[in-house]
Image 1: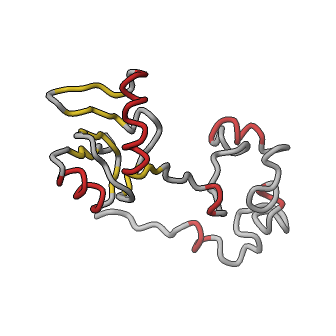
Image 2: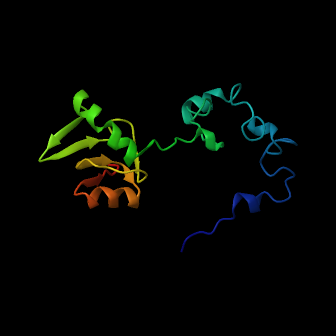
Image 3: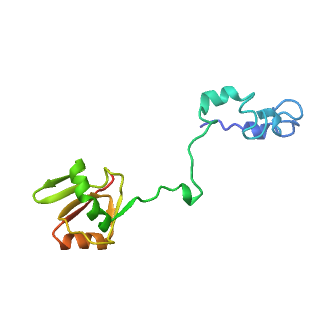
Length: 150
């Protein structure tokens, strides 16, 4: 049979400080160098270096104001129709199988909107497009290919 011994906490009943030295030791925050994060840049620096190296310094930025949020860069079908010939001359658009291939994502444009008319047969690569824009381009025999984040 195993010998059952009393726990230290029970044994020390009646001994004033129960094994924690003189009065005040093991009491309040003096024994741990202050409460909470007190002394992290002072007497607890060695603890910070060992256990929590990124305790100090900036760790990112969370915008609280909507003006900081990135805005969608948009283009209308009408605007696209106007600049197609310029894009072909500059080489940003190419003709492939009778369609003008335009990659709007490379131009920094991330949305295609359906305002205006398009007369050219186009194949457009873009992150997002309105239903109206897709409908108008498909109506004349063109294509809209929506890109996805990888």
